[in-house]
Length: 204
Image (cartoon, rainbow, N blue to C red; front, side, top):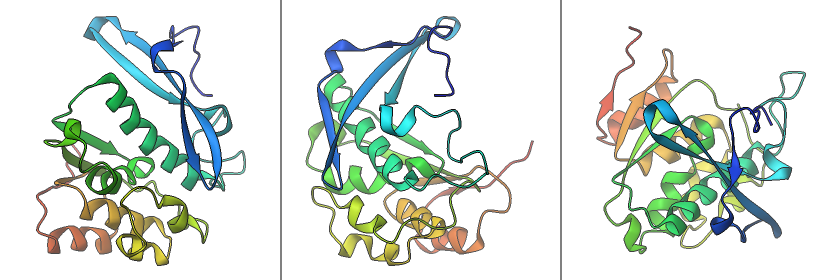
């Protein structure tokens, strides 16, 4: 909703149409759009859905409150990205997850899509920022369940906080980038104890 589609020449990718994603027993269409950055000779694909993304602000309402369905939006985004990559038949070497809205993707990749040959060599790099909601709805954990992802895998989200979501994402990632200063010590200590390679924050 923040992007001027006409100005940026976004258009729907018809060959990728027809995909739907079910969350909490509600079936929503996944719409894929594409635009080009001519100078970089690069195409950018966009995950779209009228219910989740046609808003004039990204994560918060006009009062600065996080949208109540942000958890569902993150689930839809993560599954939408992976399904789109499958349909495009790309085999990514590196999947770079930036920000909290991407933090469900690592567990889906390593659990729900682990037997898909297109992702067999994919590594996840997770960039952490100070951008997550403090809490998610109580049923957030149940809504994430999909494929081979079990309740036991999501025990850390029994208390559904942004900090615990970051820990969940880190535990299924192959490397961490600290993208901001002052990230929760609880999270950075978790990454260190997990033995993950961590690139420290660099303000320059």
